Image 1 (tube, rainbow, N blue to C red):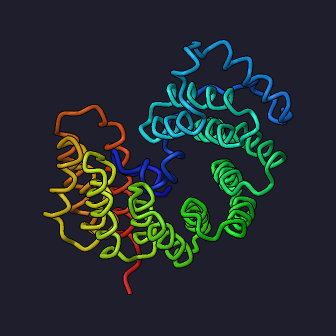
Image 2 (tube, rainbow, N blue to C red; image 1 turned 180 degrees about the horizontal axis):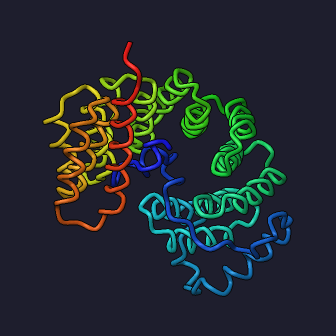
Length: 322
C-alpha cells in the first residue's frame, strides 16, 4: 500500500499529468477500436469524408486560410474545447491534405483516452513526414501513457535530435525521466522547456513539478507562482503551490493557497496530505478528520487518505526502537 494512490483532491491529476495536451479530455477515436494500424491513405480518406460531411460550405472569399484554421484549432485545443478543435483540425486537413499538422492535432486530442490509437496516427504521420518533431513527441507521450517508459524515452530522444530547441520535446522528456526516477535529469530538461517557452503556463507548471520531485521546494514555489501569473484562474497551479509551500513547512501559507483553489473540504484534505508527506502523521490525521466534517462530495477519497495515514502511524508506533 502506498499513500500516493490516494493523492489529494484536485492535486493528483496535476502531479501525474503531462503537458497541456495530455490533460485534455480526449474524444472518440476516428476509426474502429481495433484498427490501430490504419494506413495513412485510409486515414486521410476517412478524414476527407468526415470533413466533407461536417464542414458547412461558405462563400470562397469568406473562408479562413489553412494557417488561420490551424491556429484556431490550436487555440480551441489549448482552451479545452475538444469538439471545436476536432472540427477545425478536420477543416484544416480539407484545406491542405498534404500537411501533417492537422493529423498531429487530432492525435493529441485522442492521446489522453486512447493512447494506443493516437500512437497509430503519429506513426502514420512519421511515414509521411519522418522529420516531424511533434509526431515523435506524441509517440513518446503515447508510450508513456501506456507505461512503456523505455520506448517513450527513445522516441523523445529522437525528437530532441530533430529539434534540440523544442520546449515540448524537453518537457515530455522530463516527464518520462521523472517516471524513471531520474529526477535531476528530469529537472534539467523541464528547466530548458520553461526557458524556451516562458509564456506557456503548463510547461512552467511542469517545471515546478520536476523541482518538487527533485526535492527543491523553493524553486518549485517560484515556478508555480510564475504559472499562476500566466493563468490566474487555474486551481491546479494553486494546489501545487500549496504543496511547495507545505514542503517548506509553511503550513499557513499552504492552507491559503489551497483555499484559493477550491473548497474548504479540499483544502483540509490537501493540507493533511502535506503533513503526511512531511512525516507529521498526527497532524495529517487531524486535518483529514476536519476534511471529513466539511461539506463536500469527496468523503470516500478523504477516508482512504485518512486510513493510509492511520496505517502509517500504526506501523511507526509498532516499529522496533533502537
